[in-house]
Amino acid sequence: MDRLPLHHDLYLIAHDQAGRLLIHQSSLALGLAGAALLDLLLTGRHAPADPRSELKRAAADGVYDRTREGLLDSGVLVRVSRRRMGVLPYTRYQLADIASVVRASSGVRSAVEGWKPPDARCAGLCGLVAVLRLESELYLDQPGNQLVARLREIAAAAGPPVAELVEIVDTLVAEAALAVYR
Image 1 (cartoon, rainbow, N blue to C red):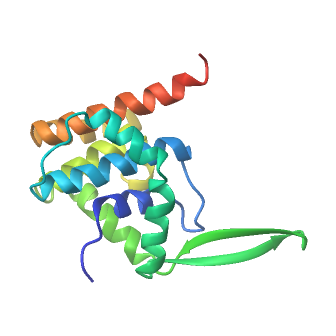
Image 2: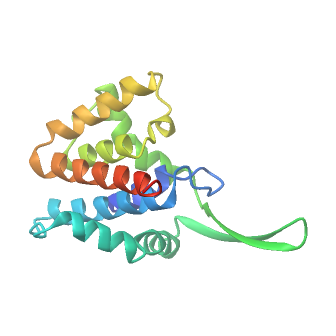
Image 3: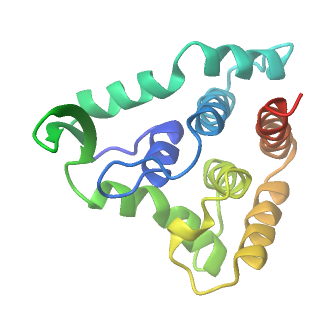
Protein backbone atom coordinates (compact mmCIF):
# COMPACT_ATOMS: atom_id res chain seq x y z
CA MET A 1 0.00 0.00 0.00
CA ASP A 2 1.27 3.47 -0.85
CA ARG A 3 2.09 5.92 1.88
CA LEU A 4 -0.87 8.11 2.85
CA PRO A 5 -0.55 11.91 2.74
CA LEU A 6 0.59 13.51 5.97
CA HIS A 7 -2.81 14.99 6.81
CA HIS A 8 -4.43 11.55 6.42
CA ASP A 9 -1.94 10.11 8.91
CA LEU A 10 -2.71 12.89 11.38
CA TYR A 11 -6.45 12.31 10.97
CA LEU A 12 -6.03 8.62 11.77
CA ILE A 13 -3.92 9.29 14.85
CA ALA A 14 -6.50 11.81 16.13
CA HIS A 15 -9.39 9.29 16.13
CA ASP A 16 -9.95 6.14 18.15
CA GLN A 17 -10.78 2.76 16.61
CA ALA A 18 -14.51 3.45 16.83
CA GLY A 19 -14.08 6.65 14.83
CA ARG A 20 -14.52 9.12 17.71
CA LEU A 21 -12.50 12.31 17.60
CA LEU A 22 -10.00 12.58 20.47
CA ILE A 23 -9.48 16.37 20.37
CA HIS A 24 -11.55 19.41 19.41
CA GLN A 25 -12.43 19.46 15.72
CA SER A 26 -11.28 23.05 15.14
CA SER A 27 -7.84 22.22 16.58
CA LEU A 28 -7.58 19.16 14.38
CA ALA A 29 -8.67 21.19 11.34
CA LEU A 30 -5.76 23.58 11.92
CA GLY A 31 -3.41 20.61 12.33
CA LEU A 32 -4.70 19.00 9.13
CA ALA A 33 -4.25 22.26 7.22
CA GLY A 34 -0.69 22.50 8.54
CA ALA A 35 0.02 18.89 7.57
CA ALA A 36 -1.35 19.43 4.05
CA LEU A 37 0.76 22.58 3.64
CA LEU A 38 3.84 20.76 4.94
CA ASP A 39 3.26 17.97 2.40
CA LEU A 40 3.23 20.60 -0.36
CA LEU A 41 6.39 22.26 0.94
CA LEU A 42 8.22 18.94 1.14
CA THR A 43 7.37 18.15 -2.49
CA GLY A 44 9.12 21.35 -3.58
CA ARG A 45 6.24 23.81 -3.83
CA HIS A 46 6.81 27.38 -2.74
CA ALA A 47 5.55 28.52 0.63
CA PRO A 48 2.59 30.90 0.58
CA ALA A 49 3.33 34.54 1.35
CA ASP A 50 1.28 34.39 4.55
CA PRO A 51 1.13 30.81 5.88
CA ARG A 52 -0.98 31.84 8.90
CA SER A 53 -3.84 33.13 6.77
CA GLU A 54 -3.48 30.17 4.40
CA LEU A 55 -3.88 27.72 7.30
CA LYS A 56 -6.89 29.62 8.66
CA ARG A 57 -8.51 29.62 5.23
CA ALA A 58 -7.91 25.90 4.72
CA ALA A 59 -9.35 25.09 8.15
CA ALA A 60 -12.41 27.24 7.44
CA ASP A 61 -12.88 25.64 4.01
CA GLY A 62 -13.59 22.22 5.52
CA VAL A 63 -10.22 20.46 5.46
CA TYR A 64 -11.54 18.06 8.12
CA ASP A 65 -14.45 16.89 5.95
CA ARG A 66 -12.31 16.72 2.81
CA THR A 67 -9.71 14.61 4.61
CA ARG A 68 -12.39 12.23 5.87
CA GLU A 69 -13.85 11.92 2.36
CA GLY A 70 -10.38 11.18 0.97
CA LEU A 71 -9.94 8.38 3.50
CA LEU A 72 -13.40 7.02 2.65
CA ASP A 73 -12.58 7.06 -1.07
CA SER A 74 -9.30 5.23 -0.50
CA GLY A 75 -11.01 2.55 1.60
CA VAL A 76 -9.19 3.34 4.85
CA LEU A 77 -12.46 4.38 6.55
CA VAL A 78 -15.96 2.95 6.23
CA ARG A 79 -19.21 4.79 6.92
CA VAL A 80 -21.35 3.14 9.62
CA SER A 81 -24.89 4.39 10.25
CA ARG A 82 -26.78 3.34 13.36
CA ARG A 83 -29.49 4.50 15.73
CA ARG A 84 -29.18 5.47 19.37
CA MET A 85 -31.89 3.95 21.53
CA GLY A 86 -33.54 2.78 18.32
CA VAL A 87 -34.58 6.33 17.38
CA LEU A 88 -31.80 8.85 16.85
CA PRO A 89 -29.72 8.19 13.73
CA TYR A 90 -26.00 8.87 13.71
CA THR A 91 -23.11 8.20 11.37
CA ARG A 92 -19.63 7.22 12.42
CA TYR A 93 -16.56 6.68 10.26
CA GLN A 94 -14.64 3.62 11.41
CA LEU A 95 -11.37 2.09 10.36
CA ALA A 96 -11.55 -0.60 7.71
CA ASP A 97 -8.28 -2.02 9.05
CA ILE A 98 -6.23 -1.16 12.14
CA ALA A 99 -3.04 -1.47 10.08
CA SER A 100 -3.63 2.04 8.68
CA VAL A 101 -3.28 3.60 12.13
CA VAL A 102 -0.26 1.45 12.93
CA ARG A 103 1.43 2.63 9.73
CA ALA A 104 0.45 6.25 10.46
CA SER A 105 2.04 6.27 13.91
CA SER A 106 4.98 3.94 13.28
CA GLY A 107 7.32 6.64 11.96
CA VAL A 108 6.65 8.85 14.96
CA ARG A 109 7.18 5.96 17.36
CA SER A 110 10.42 5.00 15.61
CA ALA A 111 11.73 8.56 15.79
CA VAL A 112 10.91 8.95 19.48
CA GLU A 113 12.41 5.60 20.43
CA GLY A 114 15.51 6.27 18.31
CA TRP A 115 15.08 3.20 16.09
CA LYS A 116 15.23 5.20 12.87
CA PRO A 117 16.27 8.79 12.13
CA PRO A 118 13.21 10.83 11.13
CA ASP A 119 12.88 12.43 7.73
CA ALA A 120 11.29 15.89 7.40
CA ARG A 121 7.82 14.40 6.90
CA CYS A 122 8.07 12.31 10.05
CA ALA A 123 9.50 15.25 12.00
CA GLY A 124 6.55 17.38 10.93
CA LEU A 125 4.13 14.71 12.09
CA CYS A 126 6.00 14.53 15.41
CA GLY A 127 5.60 18.27 15.87
CA LEU A 128 1.90 18.22 14.99
CA VAL A 129 1.24 15.31 17.36
CA ALA A 130 2.93 17.34 20.11
CA VAL A 131 1.00 20.53 19.29
CA LEU A 132 -2.34 18.71 19.29
CA ARG A 133 -1.41 16.74 22.44
CA LEU A 134 -2.03 13.37 20.83
CA GLU A 135 1.05 11.79 22.42
CA SER A 136 -1.04 9.29 24.38
CA GLU A 137 -2.11 7.70 21.08
CA LEU A 138 1.48 6.61 20.43
CA TYR A 139 1.31 4.14 23.33
CA LEU A 140 4.87 4.77 24.42
CA ASP A 141 6.02 4.12 27.96
CA GLN A 142 7.14 7.67 28.72
CA PRO A 143 5.67 10.49 30.81
CA GLY A 144 3.48 12.78 28.73
CA ASN A 145 5.47 15.99 29.23
CA GLN A 146 8.75 14.24 28.48
CA LEU A 147 7.25 12.73 25.32
CA VAL A 148 5.87 16.08 24.13
CA ALA A 149 9.28 17.68 24.70
CA ARG A 150 10.96 14.91 22.67
CA LEU A 151 8.41 15.28 19.84
CA ARG A 152 9.00 19.05 19.72
CA GLU A 153 12.76 18.49 19.76
CA ILE A 154 12.49 16.17 16.73
CA ALA A 155 10.39 18.75 14.85
CA ALA A 156 12.82 21.59 15.67
CA ALA A 157 15.80 19.52 14.50
CA ALA A 158 14.23 19.01 11.07
CA GLY A 159 15.02 22.54 9.95
CA PRO A 160 13.27 25.83 9.32
CA PRO A 161 10.28 24.88 7.14
CA VAL A 162 9.09 22.12 9.48
CA ALA A 163 9.83 23.97 12.72
CA GLU A 164 8.24 27.21 11.50
CA LEU A 165 5.09 25.49 10.29
CA VAL A 166 4.71 23.55 13.55
CA GLU A 167 5.11 26.82 15.49
CA ILE A 168 2.46 28.53 13.35
CA VAL A 169 0.01 25.67 13.94
CA ASP A 170 0.81 25.78 17.67
CA THR A 171 0.06 29.52 17.78
CA LEU A 172 -3.18 29.16 15.82
CA VAL A 173 -4.42 26.30 18.01
CA ALA A 174 -3.68 28.36 21.13
CA GLU A 175 -5.43 31.41 19.64
CA ALA A 176 -8.47 29.31 18.76
CA ALA A 177 -8.62 27.93 22.29
CA LEU A 178 -8.41 31.40 23.83
CA ALA A 179 -10.87 32.99 21.38
CA VAL A 180 -13.73 31.51 23.39
CA TYR A 181 -12.84 33.76 26.31
CA ARG A 182 -12.68 37.03 24.37
